Length: 311
Image 1: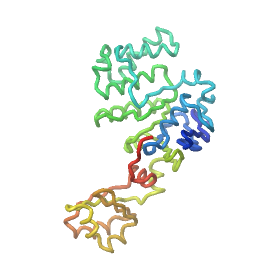
Image 2: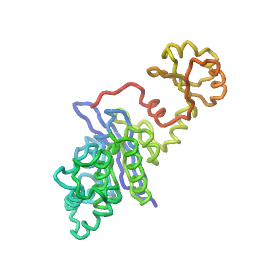
Image 3: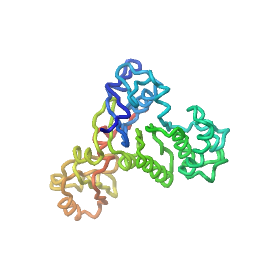
Image 4: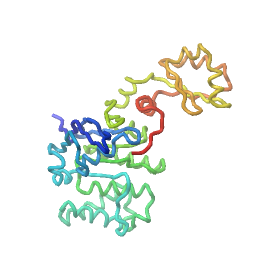
């Protein structure tokens, strides 16, 4: 029987009469990475704060390791690892000291704690920075140090709030490799991210929220197949979107199952792109990209293309 590590049921939180989280329910099983996705203001961070016992829900419940939060917060946090959206490393301590001091909060024996520091720094690719302070590290190094610190108590479940925001591509890929390694070791992860390629790469299952409610849940590829046509053609005109609109004749429009325009790009969604590509081949003024539908298409289809305000 698969163990359920986190169970959220009917979670609700209101601020000034507005439901920021509205009846949200989902679970995480052992060895699973679940992505919590949504636009700004969808309730992701508030959900994490309630899961950590930092905010009291107005309704619903959070149960972690079979224990209710916040009633058993101490016992839960002993087996939990957290990487916040912004680094909370102590600037006065070295890398090794950050791990050592943080580990003392868990009451770990001194000898056991010191024995964990070198393997954790090696895991984070920071063995050569053992005596460096956070101010001497790159952004990617600081995020990896935060991850290493979150592992100091050997947690069964990790809560990661946008762990790769602000990192360059090389640093993001290294962080992904480390997270994949943790999943292979049997750890479970709840991940919030705005990077759709990150979610598709790491997550076994997605919970997509908007206005505090779950609007879709399932495996990434299954959700894409459920909600989208399988192929996409992106069109760009040398003179901008009006030129694309003028060159798309009725036959081309009929061959596309769905057409969307965003900025200077027109998106043609179709189940079979071959006849549409043949039709567009006679329009050399159009630049196009033919690709399979992806998670970003799904996210925009479900939550819309309008930029959201924070809060």
